[in-house]
Image 1 (cartoon, rainbow, N blue to C red):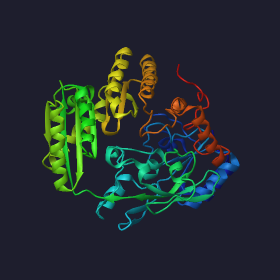
Image 2: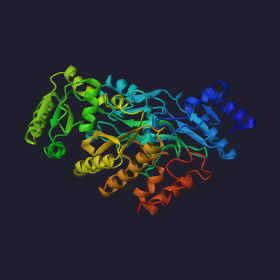
Image 3: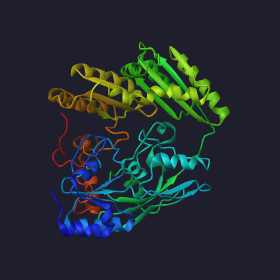
Image 4: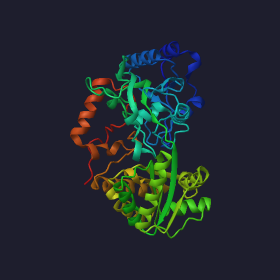
Length: 468
């Protein structure tokens, strides 16, 4: 749907003619994200200041124009996918690291800063920004905050929401507010910062972010352990945490993931192993040496068939190579995948993976499981060809069955990817009618005309559908 010439001229007047796209061949780059959902918008604008964002939102409210904030478009659930009549608000001009305060251990950044860029920059100050989504080399901090991103280091350090101290936010109706503090403590009024983190661009547009940093660790050690059975691997996960070891990463690959990686890289991994754990500890050199020994001992005591402790950074990189190769290796199986980031209590990991295997068998599908065993976040990758209607139907049925299993185990349907479009039909299953209504009322209070990223999280067509 075309945007009116008058409205378009006003948008150009706000951001400048060089920062607006209207040609289909230009806008297609902003019509999709990693979910592969694609809708071409009516217009794309690149604001350069909080004032410009505010003015666009005021205009959008007057015209009833949907506005869809966007960072790098690396999200997995369609949260930044626009509507045909909508305006995509691309925040990539907001690229400044405004301040790094090594004494207070905070960073003030604009939302278009690439996550990996901040991580490398703060290392020069002896500091670390721990959240590390797999997309860190290209995703933006604004997108990470909007989606509540996680990552490998969450088991020890937590996720993005644990590092956001404050925000500058343009609200849907135009006002610019500041939330939170620059201090470790602050309990004045409602916690609007936490409300905004993970809101998926539905409650405000971030124009500045205050982040907490931590001291960078002195050393790291990586341990790889192979297990004849899945139970031995998951028993080791629980045993390690009871030993008061705090791994900075605790990753699991099931047999299907081991096979996929071995076919792709030929690392001589034992295909008879039912599970692999990749564990990393960080901190003082003397401490991580001891913790690596404890980890090796615990894994051996729980029946590990093979254990390797990296003695150098080069060896560590070699051990991580297989884990990092899973995603490209999956592309050799089928052209498409449905990647669900389900999360269950650690005691439920074995039952989850075995149940997923049964779902795969029943629907004649390949489902590969791997992920962050330390916090129960297991990625289930349903491999398919979307052009095959029957296979797509079976995959969609499998998703619903897996979601039911997750909720029965006391888990959550999304550990780090968010809801967006892809999971919106199922949000009610987890939060219930009362929770859903409370969230919608918050949305209505801040965005009475529903112009900011409409259609995300809340799914009017299936809002009150509940599984039998």
